[in-house]
Image 1 (cartoon, rainbow, N blue to C red):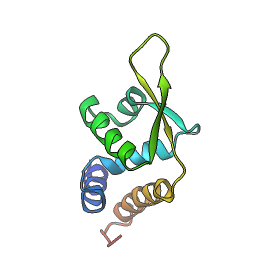
Image 2 (cartoon, rainbow, N blue to C red):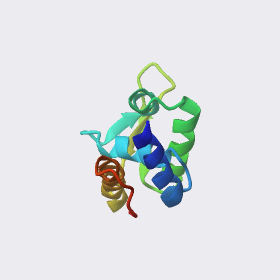
Image 3 (cartoon, rainbow, N blue to C red):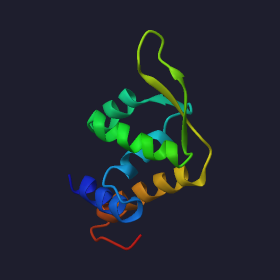
Image 4 (cartoon, helix red, strand yellow):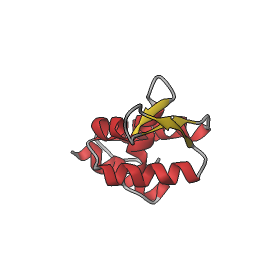
Length: 108
């Protein structure tokens, strides 16, 4: 729980949203660049409305793009676009977790 609070605080400071860092880290760690919102919802435990809102922001920023739909469904398929922010999100999450395991918060 403390890790989630720390990650949320870093996310809010950097991205203006408590959930963006969690979502970006999950997207960054997907082996294939393609994913769906329900997959992100399942791995993060976040509500669909939160995930869809953040995906909209990432899409407007050019970090993800819609590449199609799941056959027979309305579910959109997204693709992660190459950008240094994906690595940065993973690193920020890792540093937030590391600072907690060391026992004292540090500036990131």
